Length: 260
Image (cartoon, rainbow, N blue to C red):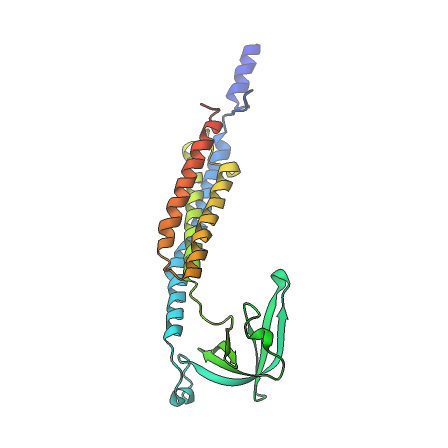
């Protein structure tokens, strides 16, 4: 009788003394399907980055770099693809640095008929010098003020197009790798519902995700600072993540199988 009860407990999937248990497919399969479905979200985000966001930002930045000063005729016709200049008056400035709540703004007026507020990414080199009543030269492009200048000191506003393509690509590659991770983890649960370790969140999944973030931004940020093209980023970040994931899997697999 005791032997029969012991066999019944063993067939029911209860943990053994050494801690290795046979995982129930009833839990593994739904989670596997869910992970595969969730992988579609970052996959769609990756598609949008490389099919729309990255080309759009690249084209806008190139158009801005190629823009020339507006002629008098272009100004009269209201063309916006050229660079127009305006003499504006500073009405108020905000220069507040307080962590996440930092705010750098300048409120400008034009002949009592227009009033607008410009945002900046940092206080220098011009914003910190401005006081109400100062006259500044504003450069506008496509109906946005992109540069303010005074006495030879210039500063871009937050509306100025920037060469942020490498960072956009980094986000796209990150989304692709996260999609791949979720898909693989889900597929393993479907293929091996009783033995899917170490393809679980802790510690393998967490470490792989941290590696993905570090690799993408570790390459994307220097690329944006140096000004190199974006296309080497996936060629560098992807092999780094794959190699790191393989090494971590090799180290964790013996633990998951009880040292066998």
